[in-house]
Length: 195
Image 1 (tube, rainbow, N blue to C red):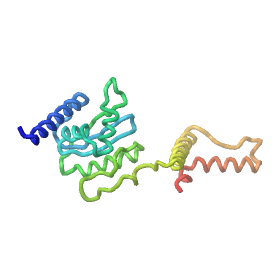
Image 2 (cartoon, rainbow, N blue to C red):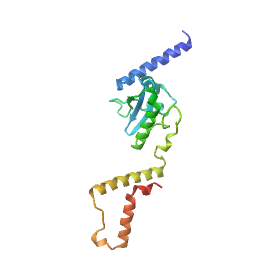
Image 3 (cartoon, rainbow, N blue to C red):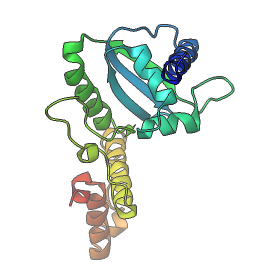
Image 4 (cartoon, rainbow, N blue to C red):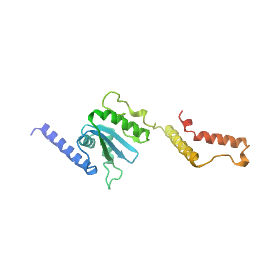
């Protein structure tokens, strides 16, 4: 047997082993086409498309090129012994819908605030763009701004639904207290953090 054939046989053997590992985690994985979801420590997610789900997912376990491949190697697959590993789920779609549905789910999970492991907005063809537009900024100041915005939104919701915020009777005519109430209301306005 030539060296090339030995290498091909070895690659195929590794692929079969990886498919078996994946099927232990999710026995429904098959060779049909669809969109797959790799989740870890929710809300972290990677979304991809595959013409053959089992082969594509197995390639992530033995690959080194993509960020998700390295992350899978570092964290492994989910198990009772490894609760921080990746879980694997998928939805079947015809091959003709893969680009559209991959982009749809990446956008959906980005809007829901999940930390996306994807580097692009999906698709294998026209319209493939970097995902930076969907991801929250990672700088320290941007993180503080996003945190303040999230807190303002949550506090506004709680106040609107359950509370009344007003000045105490003895501070009604106090200009400092009135300015403090104005400042408090500005802090609750999530739009004030958008610029």
